[in-house]
Image (cartoon, rainbow, N blue to C red; front, side, top):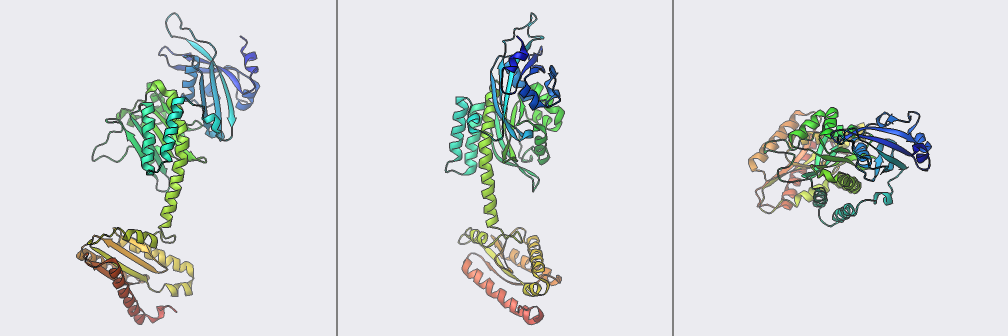
Length: 462
């Protein structure tokens, strides 16, 4: 067969690959024997016939696995994956060119061949993404129905992971998010079979996944779309690039893994990964996880956005304290008979600062007031309810503890030349309701404010 004439008959980028099978029946060297003009144009000037593929593109064990299955095992392989380095999606097809026959001494020295065809699309195309096995499609549809259900978001995520676990016969499945502002790795959802990785004890840290480790996954994935470990050879390759992670997986008995980013509009939100799955179904599991990540990434992005908006609606934009809406919701948690303390504070002299130094100076004073209250009442709920008005709520506190907090506040104010609060307080043992307590605290605050301005008339509001 004239391979060059063969590839030249294909309109899309096409090449013929030779794949060597090692005596251990694993993937050996892969070479690009020849290619057509569209393939050469896509690959650039570094290409030459007969070159090892990893001289042209980064070595990728997932691609090698697909080549091995096509050239050595005689399986037709197809994948539609995101090529992140090119900001495009790649539709890949590998077709066996012949069924390789073992040499006389078994599999030693066997070489197989396959045709590799690809096509780029700028955006993910639904028709191409939907080209999956019937069983994978059923699992994805069932999971998506769960995501759109009326249950809680976390319960819905858990059911999605259950579906992945059932399909892949895995021992564990997780969704980890990257909080770059706080530099934290956040475990959003997890399903773990009994006795499976990770092993935890009562006094152990919540998770072995650190923020630095999570960030290292981005570099490991590189131009590919996932991390795949299905045998000892893959684990050895992983250990070369990330020995700490490889050692952790070895310690916890992890032998196989598929990890894929969860992203929205090129922004990586976190990662979905499956542990100790049935490696005889590697292609199907990878296919399922890739498609599931597309839907999960979209839903998680929406959830995070709504959560952020909800948090912002309960926070004061200037000081970061909780606002009046948050206070009203918190007050609903004070049940009849529960002891509580309330402090009503008004920042003295804000109007004068605004008038004489400008509103920027007034804003800085408000921020300092919020910081001071946060340090002093870090165990309590603090709200900014108006321009210069603050509320401190202490649910379940004893009278003695509440009085000590009040005294510390008064002592702190007496030492501060910049911050001064008019304050009124009330403690209830549960026999006085919220409305009466707030009214009394408010009256006492105004009385304290009048006394302050009688003593300091130059700081009185005009």
